[in-house]
Length: 91
Image (cartoon, rainbow, N blue to C red; front, side):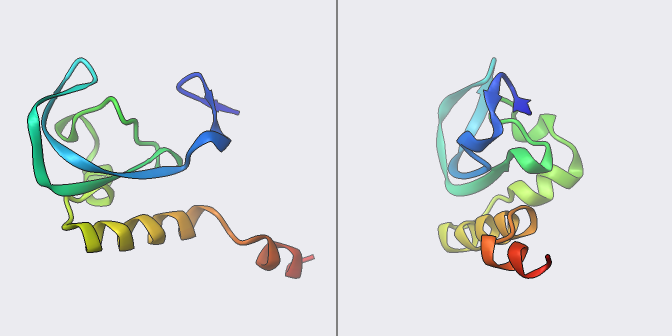
């Protein structure tokens, strides 16, 4: 399966500095001191501005201070990707 023309295994989620605004998929006006989680497994797309995604994705995105953003990133990955050991125990 591919997402936005790329194989899904390339990335699942990223934490990035929140841009002041996004125009045509590119940050403009610098960045804030806050971070956001972009999760393709949740259906998000890095080229969309915060205001262009659903309220559900806005809740996933944040914004977060860096420590909270890292925790939200790990939580999001945990919802979508089970460790190999846990998967093999279910057989």
